[in-house]
Amino acid sequence: MRKIIFILTLCSALLAWPVLAAQIINIAVVTRPGMGQSVVAEKFAEKVNKGNSGYLVNVIDSGKAGDETRILQKLQQGMLQMAVITAGPYDQFVPEVEALEFPFLFSSYEQVDKTLAGKAGEVLLDRLQKAGFKGLAFSENGFRHLTNNKRPVHNINDLQGLKIRTMNSRAHEALWNALGAVAKPYPFPINDVLAQGKVDGQENPLWVVTAYELNKLQRYLSMTGHVYSAHIASADLKWWLGLPEKDRAMLQKAMLEAAAEQRAASRTAEQGILERLFKQGMVMDLTPDVASFKAKLGNYAARPMFQKPETAKMLKLLFAGE
Image (tube, rainbow, N blue to C red):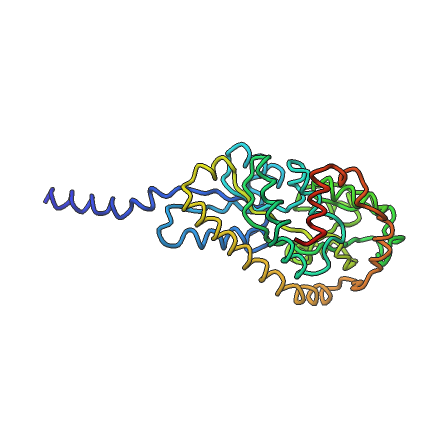
């Protein structure tokens, strides 16, 4: 009987071995489950966790690992293995990322895909290595639009003096100040900031407005599309380089597929979101005078932040759409 028990125990242990031996990958995002960055992380986890990959992905969502800047710091410190973060906060670590946040850089999703899937996107992801990140893929936040709770904003004159919440990004702060607004950086989520009247408005893709019910705190929507906002999936470079080459290839493939699926789903949902926000009472300007915004910016590429050699080179690649 003891021999039989020993054999059964040994078999159970052997069957459990792949699970017990799986390497944990902690991937952090600031969005709630089913939203934005979380969708990418969830799809990635689904692809990696099925079968016997040797890895088990654990998604840390809803900002439980900290705000986006803190998450990037944890990647650098080896406290996390992976993250999906809005591109903007990367500019605190890799200034060239500011080029991707250049106002009115893209006019369509087709242009976005061609550029970020080409040389410009490849170079930008590679540049993250100097700050200790392995850039893996671009997923999507979307084109950013302006909301506020003070007055309709149709042209640049309507914007003057409005206090606008921005993410912690030098490029975004500089943009709104240049446009004549007053930039106020606050980490996401921002419902309390809006509810307490610390700012008049904010700017985000449509899905953020509806998912976080910002329309309950903001009356006016202007479809400015002033910046295309990407998410960047990245890994702790030191950890990544320590993985076997075949495993890196498997994880890279899974992330690229997850990012592509998230972009497609996000774009499909946009029209429905706009209709829902309208029905819920937002006052919308679907065709604001974007030309007046561009005129106010003038030769924005001449600003010092875009004249730094590496940033200027990155911006040139992005403009070329290579």
